Image (cartoon, rainbow, N blue to C red; front, side, top):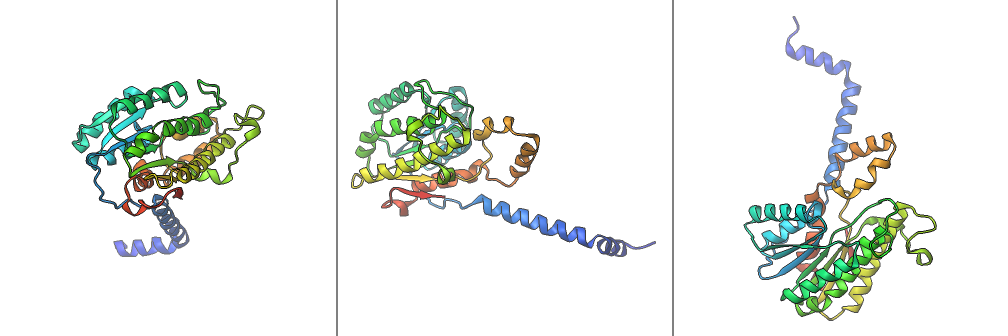
Amino acid sequence: MQNYAEVLKDFIERHATGLTVGAVTGIGILGLRRWMAGGVCRSKARLDGKTVLITGANAGIGKVTAMDMAQRGARVIMACRDIPKAYSAADEIRVKTGNSNILVKKLDLASLKSVRELAKYVQENEKRLDILINNAGIMMCPKWKTEDGFEMQFGVNHLGHFLLTNSLLDLLKKSAPSRVVVVASVAHVTGQIHFDDINLDRNYDNLVSYRQSKLANILFTRELAARLQGSGVTVYSLHPGLIRTELGRHLFPHWAWWKRTLASVLMMIVKSPWEGAQTSIYCAVEESLANESGLYYR
């Protein structure tokens, strides 16, 4: 009877090609996964006595960002559309961080009335606002309209945050040095603003719409930074990466089976919400960025 070493040697010799391909593929996938993970925010900055408002903080990278801000000692305002889910997330954050200074407020970015109501509450009840993180978003949804008649992706991703940010500028200036962080996307690179058909009524395409909204985020960041120069309020935009979150929930059900299969495989190597939140956190707290504004990070 052959001993174990001989059997193993024989197996390797018989399947050398397959084993080599498998090993190389595995190493490649592992390397790609590590590359996709991106960097980690190493800042130890504390936020005691400071207030941070995060939109869409009940799930995904918004929730991770809220957790991080709470761990640094900040008062965190979670501005969310899904209130029950937000309360659940807030409870989890309180337990895990030991920070009870977590507030949940209603915000539906598809309603300018809701945006104004939140801004009014913050203006009247908060003494300061040190960091505003425009995190919430919607991606590649069907042809929907906001409460005010705007195309949904442009309305939620850009217009709602545009109004919220401008409504809170006085408080941000009063709290300076303060920051505005805009979660955009690399999709802006191939985007364009359709000034003659901003709602894409003539020919709606959900990807074209998404790209337009993300380009609007970038342009808003740059213009706002220019206008706020010397005010003590700095502005940052970022691409969080490809992440396993609920953001793509409108996309996958309409894909062909082979696209869904490919996407399922891809999900194994994309960023986790924790990894995806690192760029937002970096822009919010990294001390070396204090004198930078209007730039894009990824």
